[in-house]
Image 1 (cartoon, rainbow, N blue to C red):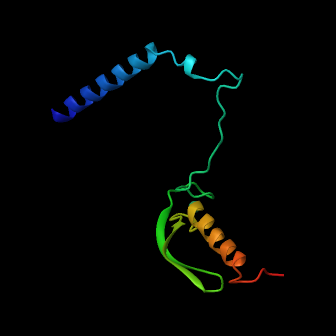
Image 2 (cartoon, protein in one colour):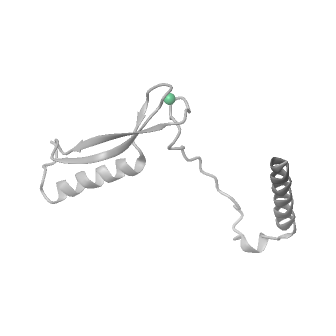
Image 3 (cartoon, rainbow, N blue to C red):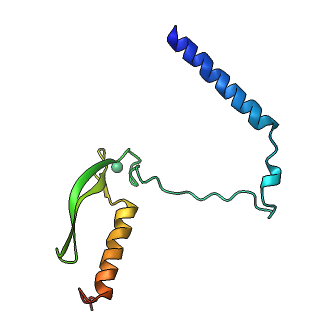
Length: 112
Ligand SMILES: [Zn+2]
């Protein structure tokens, strides 16, 4: 009985939302540059780039600069299906920034 009521409420909500959007003209809000939409395919970071499975987070300690800097409890993404390991883009970017800063301040020397 309760489930039926929730289903009815959801159906009414969708119907009302559809009616609102059917009556609304958004063309005035769009810039007229002959290219209405541009789509870019962005990889889903939570999906395995090899097999598409949902990735699982696994905490590790990430050592940088020859173990001079350690980032504790960094989350790596591990595929439960094919065991592929991906580093989240934010972690990868942060690691590169730390290494670049270390080079800039002379903490490490550029590899020849
Ligand atoms: Zn996989």
